[in-house]
Length: 511
Ligand SMILES: Nc1nc2c(c(=O)[nH]1)N[C@H]1C(S)=C(S)[C@@H](COP(=O)(O)O)O[C@H]1N2
Ligand SMILES: [Mo]
Image (cartoon, rainbow, N blue to C red):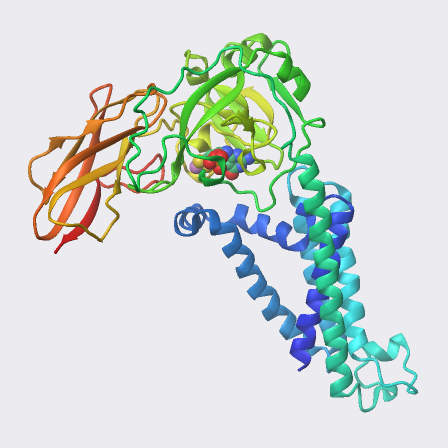
């Protein structure tokens, strides 16, 4: 009973904190997002990696659910202690709020106001706990009586029904406050997400996709991944929302001419459009963290050359609006490949989750060393001087995408009819290109699959073949060879520290 009252008080505290965060336009400073962000950053690399691979895009949801369980447990304990040890309960609540406030202040780019949501939440929670101890009308208790558990003014305490009503009322207020906060934040974000933005066309358009780049095999993903189906991997619990008219990009560090560009500056430059397939280093053999899009942006190498890169610099340390960093080998960006500071994806401004208003894209490199979303800073520096978010956690500094292939049709454990069966999938080796894809069944001889038309070395390539299925259980295996002649090795290595290897296989049954 008292425990559930504690939960209602906590809900009220969180609801008021959320509303405060929304009103001061600092949604990431709410106690849950701030504590969650600290938890993510303090988590050991193996746990982060596990979360990405196990929960995928749901990893944030899982984290918030976990936090909610912790909050409910803590609030129950505080609520249970409140009737007998009010000072202890209030002390614990204020202590937790102080931790949440400290978490908010510790975030990159935090402001002093970020402590406000936790402070308001603490006040709300404290009043709620005291309210629980308010005595029935006619019995005048002072604030001092409320925190003194042996106060004679409280003899008898609040009765059960009164407490229930108050708890329900508090939950109601909590839901209203929290809901209002959410509504305010999402309305603001909707206005800031640039959906209505009209971008200029490319000065240097992408070559049209060759007919036949997409094999249109049922069950095989489309060649170009629609924005809403594109995989998402990042550490952001609250998507950084940077209105494009407030966004700037700082180019600094080891450059002769540091610069600060606005979004309007970007759009006055000639824009380049390219087809580039993006892949996450956390992708397991056969995994889903690869996607293809047509990107529009300014040429990154041109931008850096204008700034005058100094001798000795070998790293671009890019930073996002929420403080995440990536370190990119400078020479890859300057070697003539189509590295972009992208503003559009598949003909539309970048969706908020994919980095609006601007992100980096470097063909051939895993996302964590190249694809900074919500990018606000490019610092030219040296690998020996500074490390980035994932390289500090033991991931490789140089991370070219490894040659990979996966079977998408048939699905694992599918039942397929005897006779001719289509096997199809995707292979990639960005910036080298796919030269061959081979299949084998039950460890037998390899045969060549047919390749879809190539859209260039920076994109993935679909493939298909026909297999004469015979009754029984069978293991289908695939391996690709890239244009440098390198064939995927059989050896299975996990994603850490520079990408998985091994052949993807699928078991099927033929009745
Ligand atoms: N700001 C920011 N940018 C980021 C990340 C991140 O955590 N924060 N993750 C990177 C990783 S690991 C990958 S694989 C790609 C994924 O891009 P996507 O989410 O648009 O598919 O973004 C990269 N850019
Ligand atoms: Mo990634």
